[in-house]
Length: 311
Image (cartoon, rainbow, N blue to C red; front, side, top):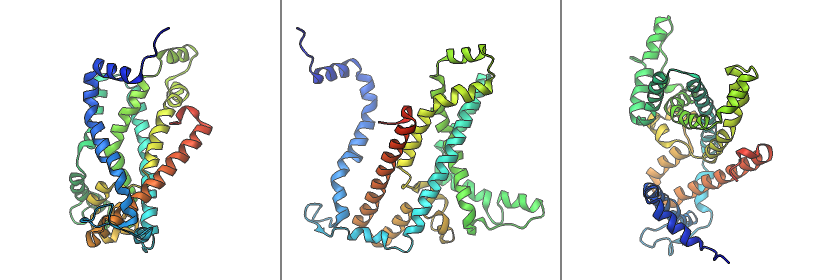
């Protein structure tokens, strides 16, 4: 009888065989362990009046009082709505644009043009939001902005965009899509390259054109990837893009009604209060809601589209 190989030995032998691969993934594993799992014990300070000198084991227990900081605020409903609404806009339009870019690039036959296009679309992803904020100011400035100059050329008056709160969800969505759609399109392109070419050959023999192949073969086979990425985005729907919002909006109070999100609201509040327990309470609230959303979205997906479910 063959001896059953112990799992530990197989893992060690796999590490010896693929040492370079494990070495490459080591920084990501260390980052996840330090800033992910090692922070779990500190979630208890959401229920304490945390004292730096006493630590998490001796700080005073206050129960759910820290959650009152956010839920009893007169802006809690507004910032929660803004967070969910803006993220929904980012997810929907970002996904649609990334899919469109991937499908168009997949249909192009000039390889040099495709490579140049991919590089140009990836470039915005590496630009800091601080730099983009200056670009945005050059576009929407009251006196010298490009948009207002174009409006003036058509006989229209200049608009002070930095006081027009209702316009900024659209502006933020455009900037978010412009910056991130190229990177998402690369993921979808990788999915397309994994599709079996014999499917297209069979469809061509049956007389299908490229548009029919796109809608009958490419898109259906991309759906599992689209759904998984969407579920991961839905899990973070309670987390706004703090770097983006704060860089583009800053402390402009006239735009808070449509752009102020949970993260920026808590940041501004804690600059004045400086209580880490209240920040942890809001962060825990966001995490719990995110977990529920991912779990619920996965349950719905598993029921109606099993191939796209995470588990």
